[in-house]
Image (cartoon, rainbow, N blue to C red; front, side, top):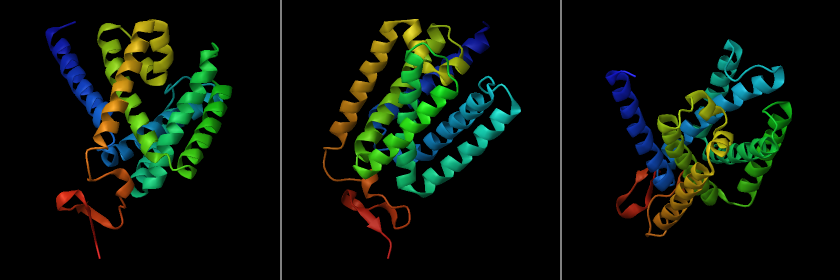
Length: 231
């Protein structure tokens, strides 16, 4: 590795770690900024994995998978930006989808049509349950803590574990389990600290929170932390 390439990787790693820390420990406060970003990446991964599951192709191995992934990503990002409840539903669905796929792959099965179906069904159930039971706050905290922890641990795995970035993006959970139980404990530890930090942050008094946000009526937080409504 040349000095220039090492320096570029080091800079990228620092940026990734900084982003991961912000998401893991302050994701609830920055959630509106993260919503369309989350929607884009989840849509891209779901679209590409749908082509992979339906046609047996490799992950992002064809132009079709890239095109479908990008199209779904744009739709999800746009809906997440315009409609808060859809963004939260997609966030909860992403957690459910990852859980469903992870359960299937925990039995040693590779990603395929079965894993995709279980993931989609689990995602829909978790999304509907989150909205019906009004669990948005906890889903936001848990999802951002897990996402931030995944970015942090994934960065270390990429830098020091020698794992390629595409495999980390496609199936980070399995790679962490196969690499070392220590990495899994690190991931869970960072996620747990993130949940605690974000929960404590929501108890520090009045201020802007995602639940008070309405993109159509709120322009900006007013003095003292209350939301300023337009006439």
